[in-house]
Image 1: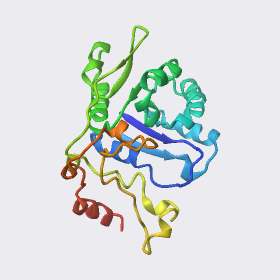
Image 2: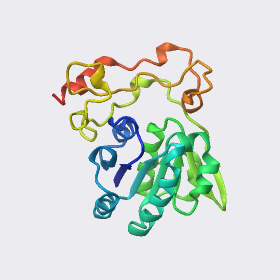
Image 3: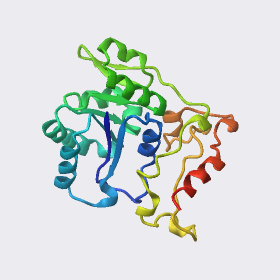
Length: 240
C-alpha cells in the first residue's frame, strides 16, 4: 500500500521535522511505500500540494490537527475527496485525541477514520489489515481507532505504550533534519544538522495549560520514560 502523510501549511512559530509522522512511518511495515509531504517546510502553494497528492494517488492519507487547524482540515478534506476519492483519509493529533466524537462528526463526510493518543503500533496493524482487506465489524479490534458504524461514532479503547525502547525511531530519510532551518534550535546548538526527539511520553504533573497527560496519560515511573539515546545516536550518524 501507498501511505502519504501530509503536513499542510499552518500558522506556526517553528519549522521542525514532523516527528509524529516520522514515528508513524518508522512503525509501518517495510512492505508499504511511505512518503511525508511537509508543505510548511517546502512552502509550495495548495495547488501544487494537491497536484502532488493526485500524482501519488495514495491508498491512505494521514493528517494531524490542532484545534486551530480544523477549519483548514475541513476544506482540505473536501478537496482530497474530490481529487483522490478512493484514498482513505485518517486524522490524528491533539484535536482528535481530546474530542474524538465531536471532531469526527464535524468531519463526518470527508474523513474515514481517526486515531487518538499514541498509536504507532496500532496504526501499523491497521494499515496491514487494510491491505489484505478488513470487514467493518473487525474495526473494533484496533486500539485507539475512531470509526463510523451505522451513524454512530465508535472510539475504541486507548492503548498507551509503556516500553518506549520497543518503538522504532523516526524514518529520518523522510524527514531529513538537514533540510530544515536551524531555528528554533540554533539558539542552543553549535553544530548542525540537529534533530529533535521525543524522550518521554506522558507526564505526572497537573498543569491546567498542558494537554500532555490527557494525550499520553499520567506517568510516574521514569524508567518507562527514557528512550535509548545510544540507538538514537546511531540513527543520526547514518545521516552524517
